[in-house]
Length: 411
Picture: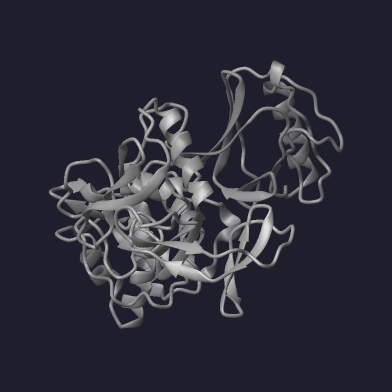
């Protein structure tokens, strides 16, 4: 299995890179001579630039971006890691000048990459079988997402998978990786796109109901009944009328859509199998706007598309303060709400949850379940199944139905 190139930094300016220790003074001197001959900049003491050092920091030098052309690799030290801006990475670091930026690319084996992903994506405290399921899903997912770019294969952000290097590794998570070494999921002889998320809320979703894509046979909604321990199993979110008006107005302007005037209410037009919101209608005074559930939840910062809502109106406030927006706590007979610019206690009245409320509303309450897109494996669902005695293969075959587990060749 060839090594993977993971972009860990894209910056302009100065950077810190450390390389582990050297076994002797002679090895250090040889290293200095090597880099003096191939890198177009001088070595300096105690600079804040691109920093390559011993553990005691006795060797350092600085990159001047204008003097850097092409690509060169930082060799790894005796201990097998390179430290970039305080984070240790296995393998090697390629430093590449591309257009107006400098890219730091971690060249690392697939298994070492997965060792850095698993504890970055799933709590180390989870059951070992859940961690093994995560290892297989992460290994499979990265292979399905490989770029054709010569610069790098994947990123280190959650856009691909969170990859925080060697410092996040633990004995337990590394065991999960080693005990599933080389194993990936396939469907019809091809590596699958093994997407996953934090918490489903009790049921996952068909991929076409979340993304505008054709149905995928192994990404079907399934039950995930043991997630109650997740802090995201159920949630509430409160959004003021003013915030709703501003968010929708901005979205319409940025997308060059016809204005709909004041937002009067919402109406759910279509639900998925979970039942997440697939399509929702924003009802305006002069028109209507249909949004996909994913777009709507992103606009208002909702944890998932599994939600219902209530419109609420409050009577005259009787407490004022300078505090600012958002949370809601019990207060006397009503509720205490922090809004922009004032602190107010109200007696509340709830209106119907669909269409246009009979009177103007002050706030909309979203009641939801789960966190994330809801497709593929639920991480808290995997933990719940593992605690019930399921092994990692059972977990994977449940969330990715019809797939098979295959061990990759090492070449």
